[in-house]
Image 1 (tube, rainbow, N blue to C red):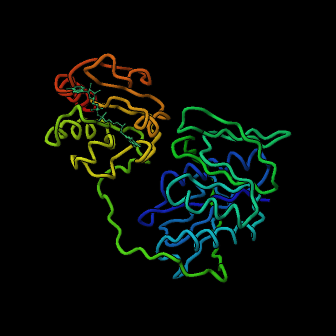
Image 2: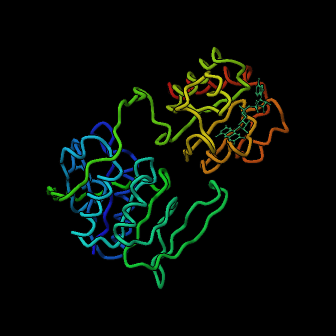
Length: 320
Ligand SMILES: Cc1cc2nc3c(=O)[nH]c(=O)nc-3n(C[C@H](O)[C@H](O)[C@H](O)COP(=O)(O)OP(=O)(O)OC[C@H]3O[C@@H](n4cnc5c(N)ncnc54)[C@H](O)[C@@H]3O)c2cc1C
């Protein structure tokens, strides 16, 4: 019996969420007295490196079918490895790609599945996992009873832990992988920025910033503290900022350690995407703004007065 982890890549590098998933897998494997097998599909620079995060083995799959991400092909190949290595607990990160394969893999393995998992499982009489539900407003504890259990874990829920071990790398030939039913015609990558879903700090702004020309302050603050930038839906609808920055119910869901919301009212649809952030700081000139109810810290003030002081303080702090 093994704990099998899907190690997702981006630009041939393992994503931060994959390192979290391997660390998570190690913790579970230690509790179960089993080993961790990480599965690396497509080209990745350094499969051995996953040993530093707890993988005992890394299985690599190279095939023309994996040249671009295909949910059908990746799910089928990953499920084949899970079967070949007698996977009893399967870990996938709840990223866009992870979500698109998790359900498929669960069906192929006849596994019991829990998505949005935010903590380590309690393993006793039952295998109990904690899930975020209702857009992170509540938690549900779910017992998984099937022999094979698949957990899709929310990025930024657990720490990456370093391990001294090295991982044995072997190649796996998955048979009969069907060609993808979808064709990716074009991929537009945002380069040179911290990906929103992986960012530990996010500086986000809304209509209170009055216009796109004022985002220089948001960028300045983000750069000073090593943050990614985000925005509310109207801001991206008005093309003040790209849609890739839109967070909320109809945008990206994030769970950074620190979310700084500037000139955003805190509508329920916005909160749906950010309320799982560990610490929320709100800057708004209206003391009645609903966001203050969800905030850990709040500054009632005009963003155009507060931001220059905050940027100055952040720059001085990071210069020391
Ligand atoms: C089906 C549906 C889905 C939706 N999905 C999303 C979603 O995914 N994400 C999302 O964000 N929204 C979403 N919305 C829209 C949501 O309901 C709100 O309308 C939106 O979040 C408001 O954006 P805002 O806070 O930027 O703007 P506003 O509501 O206009 O709020 C601006 C805020 O800025 C403050 N302010 C103004 N000037 C200043 C200043 N100088 N200094 C400091 N503060 C200032 C104001 O007090 C106010 O609180 C959705 C709506 C629907 C119906």
